[in-house]
Length: 101
Image (tube, rainbow, N blue to C red):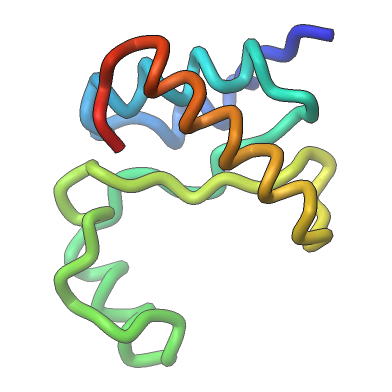
């Protein structure tokens, strides 16, 4: 089965480095499971809020430059083996596109 990114995921990829967007777009096509983009590029203010709340331990996140995305299985599940499937798809897509992750 082939999946595609939903409109919310596409919106959340705004500001993300174009190469990483290409990898995510290819990964969804080859993934064994559907996934969603939870967050892409993050503002400094949002990073500061996450840091203050203990949701991150750094103010130097790659989200600030658009070089990171947070992905999760769709529908949302915290079942770790599903995250491994998404990771496998991302690395396979990066290899196919010759884009280093």
